[in-house]
Amino acid sequence: MFAQVIRATVKDTAAVAAASEKWQKELKPGAKGYLGVTSGATDDGKSITIVRFESAEAAQANSERPEQGEWFNNELAPHLENVSFFNCSEVDLFMGGGDDSAGFVQVMVYKPSDLGAIRDVAKTFENVAGERPDILGGMMVIADDGTIFDANYFTSEADARAAEGKPMSDEVKAAMEKFRQVAGEVEFLDLKSPELRS
Image: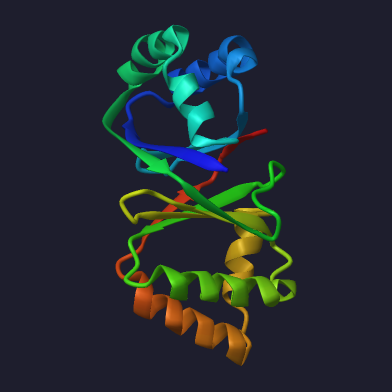
């Protein structure tokens, strides 16, 4: 799997939603290798879009379609600021991956000092996932520059916040501490109205 990540600041949320809907109806049928998208914006207008493809070649072929460029430049870009793109050659799935039924998605953005240690922590969390029925799944999208976009899918924000306040097992506490040690500075993007499509 390959992912393209787009980060930006949203100027017009409704216009961005309309542009996304147009892409789904008019351009998706010609996007070979497209697997799905997770997208949304925080309350303060920071947006993130994670588009999944079968391969880097499929993503590149989609980017090179004339209609894709026209759509981005004319329908989407005018409603965004501070746009940045990330190519992500590695995608690790957590509990089978994201879930389009999620009512809340939190994306953690960080550049760890030790990717292997982060992957070990993710395995630990997966092993004790039964302690958090509010978590439906997740994916760790690793950009070519080392930035990680760690998307976690929850039944709802209320369920996630309630679970965060409950006591953790010693195993989870240890994993959390290890994560803090190697993840470095972490930015949290809370998507309260996520767009989730496969």
